[in-house]
Length: 84
Length: 406
Image (cartoon, rainbow over the protein chains, first blue to last red):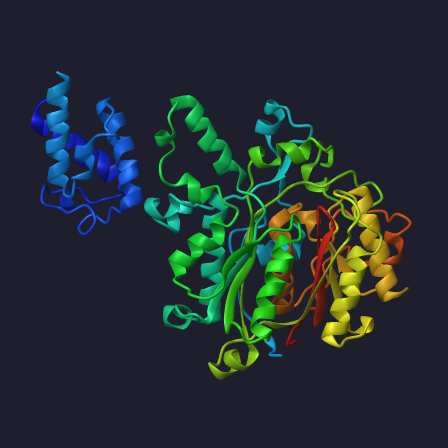
């Protein structure tokens, strides 16, 4: 899975889970302000990402530093590289 | 004490998912009871249940909004929206500390079951996700509606078994009468799923007339053999009469009195005088005589003992010439936590549309129901006044008296 495929999967996964417009899924989108994802949604975001990428991420410090969709893209790409 | 007006009603039940459809079902005496194969397969003694058809939660709220809501809370939202629209109140009228929410509900079983299933399946609590803690609380209806409607006054749920809805409407009326709230969106809701009903089925309290499910619920009939669970959601907008008149609202009816009692006797067997004491007190609070009541919307659930006790109570209160009596549970089944509130909605529909719905399947009276003026066929005359009874496990009873401008 290349980086773009990872980004696409993240975007469609989150768009489906939270009924978001795929056109709004840009790297600069702030999760809370632009995509309307609150602290409860972040709990469910971790679950759907874990399911989509078959990894465990909840306990990782880096998760707490995520503010934008681009942060998620980078986090997951990095995580996938670690796993390979 | 302020007078309390009904200015809006809404309903989702096995008789329909809006007031208009439910009106037609009530008028025609149409049953909403079905045979559920799933319950048979899973080992129920009685697979009979009320069934809601055509209600699509996604038509009312987004996935994110529904995440914290079980189906019956979404149904409570839909019923409340119907009631609010009917009342003519806008967001600017209800987003204040004089507007409250009180619903009756005594379980949120399916959410509790599903969250435990998830934990057992995945072996870690995080797999449960964020919504279940809110879905599994008994107060899930009012906590969710409060965030959706943005009301800022009373916000709580009353749990008193099968009189929950009756007490919720009654307490809402009392808060307005006392001047503590100007308006309250109130009602009751009940989940329809086998998970929430299996332990009730274990009591052998449900009817086993499987051949014709629509004839199984037969309150007051000599051949009754048990109740059938139903559910959905009922909502009522109550306002101070003065405020409703001032804003030019259409007044559908008035809550004349709310009274309550408890048995202090047995966990499952009703006392001989519990509901009767509530009825008598309600008449006193309403400053009405028994002869002033046109119609009793009975609690009777089609159980041998419960119906018998209520029949005797009605006779004691009203004497040999009782008002018209019908139990709408003959069509809906027992809507449990919702029933005390749905009776207020159904009765208001009948008053508005000019009829009294029948107690279907009443073919032969027993020694006590023989003394009641039970409505066998639809009467094309509206009730001007009505008494709505509700009773719950543990012996908790409510009685609401309604008056209509007909």
